[in-house]
Image (cartoon, rainbow, N blue to C red):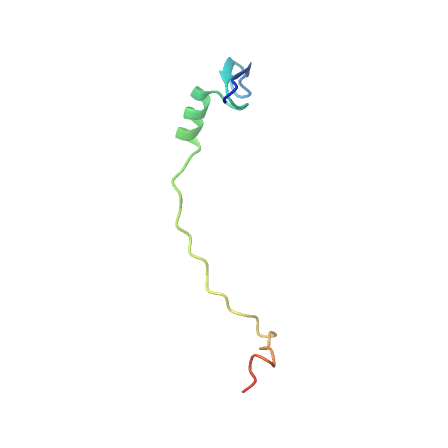
Length: 62
């Protein structure tokens, strides 16, 4: 059940009818072409505790 709403595009000011408020379809296409980028694979460094952190006495109990 989609409900289209008429409003002025906040980017270009043109009158549009869209389901959600935001930039019109033409503005979204321009934004994707100019601002969008491919996702990057980022690897997080392995966790290394600080030197002042000591193991729990219960965890090291023999």
